[in-house]
Length: 429
Image (cartoon, rainbow, N blue to C red; front, side):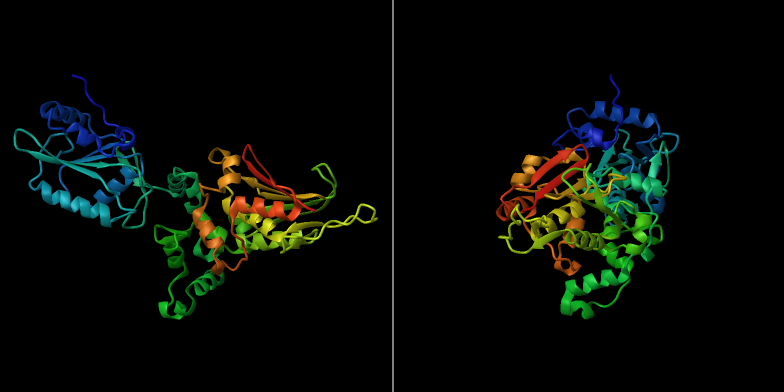
């Protein structure tokens, strides 16, 4: 008889199936065989994925152990088995089951939704198997602490370990990672409340005043950690203090160059590197671009001067096209890509905007034809493009940008995805 080995929940569930390992283990057709496998599992003792408990007594400890398993790949806690791997059984499994459900749904954030199996043996003893998966990780306990499991022991996760928990998420959730080198003091509170006031309008005074940290948490731009609320990447990018963000999160930066010519080897007229929150970068970048080109709100912008004139004309661009390209770079950049600022190169005949990205998630043809079906940084996008944030943005995305640019200049923008860069070239006229 081949013994089944316990593996994390993510390995136990087959694609398309929501049934747990234990639901499959204790099927009615082979009760004796499956109980034997459970006994073999218990005899193997505790490890990274299995915890044995004689009974449910210390709720706080149970909560931390559930959180640790959920944050460390999933696993199971078996109630009714002592440390010597002897099955003592439970007096009232139904009561234990109800209490476990209450703990998982009300004492852990986000809630854990475990599989719970009550198992009865021929000798009348009954135990409970609490099967926990990692699909909604990371989780934290009632005390706002994150726990992880290492072998058969657990410990409170330090700042680096919490960051790693969040980096397991999909790329579009990188914006939700807490920045542990920051505090609420690094947030521009006036900016936050200006946004809230504009958002709520005449209801603002009726809703009362509450701490900025709580506001960020409610907006999912701040995370509980120990006794503090830590701003997330998105929180700092949107509302971070511009004078401090360069040191705290240097990826919130943009590099601009005015190049006299049509290639990177041409002489540089001016170069600037700006740090700050996204609103600051948006405004400073537009001001820099406006010093060297004419930005027109109308579609039918004026044409260039005849070639016979002695002085070359400033290039002309449709302003909404440039605004949308800049918005796309700031909102959709992959902020997990290090040491690469957003780059804007202003040539004599075009403007090139280079956005750091992870190209595995992007298709040039798909973006051109259908826009961004997969949205990077959805929280950033929602706040940045809200009128309450105070910036004048435009609608339409990449497809709208292409249409408007073509109608304005007669040339379609050039879009390329090369390695970890997303590039848009807009041509002047």
